[in-house]
Length: 228
Image 1 (cartoon, rainbow, N blue to C red):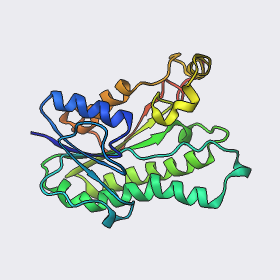
Image 2: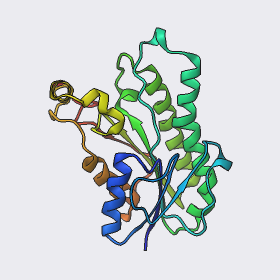
Image 3: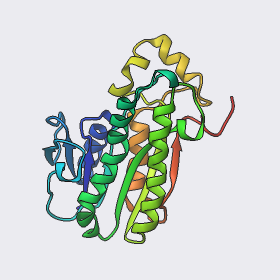
Image 4: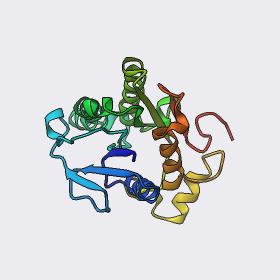
């Protein structure tokens, strides 16, 4: 039975994917900063983002997904240094320390996979996305570096998202007018869903993507590659 670790387990995408995996007989362990709101196989609360803040877990882990992130859309001039430091800790250092903590567990698996999340704003310059682009750009660099260093035992890939309808983006999609406005900026004319992301996560975490590592997969309604 496959065993996966979801860090940031209270995200909508984590909850949806965990439910899908459980229906297929897989085990999903959830880690979050507060009590998990979904029925994971096991759940733990972690206290911070350093390596020692993450709880010890026994046994092999076949896949690790790091969900925590931030969406701080501000003009460059209004960004404060303390905000940038906090967001870097959440997006980048937390991801790095999580992999360091659970690397022994991943090495116990025959075919382990790690998945990070990036943003369309890394490839496509967008106003008010300086913090997002900087932090997710670091994630893309980390993805490729770890993929090279941990191969062939562990695969590492990232999903670069455009706006996806979740709790984190609720203030940008809380009216039909806002949703339609954002949707029409994408060549496919829609906003991403938790199901869209979950389908790609399943691909990256299982043997369906056994010959793929070091890749940044753009799940963005065509925004990064096409001009409508």
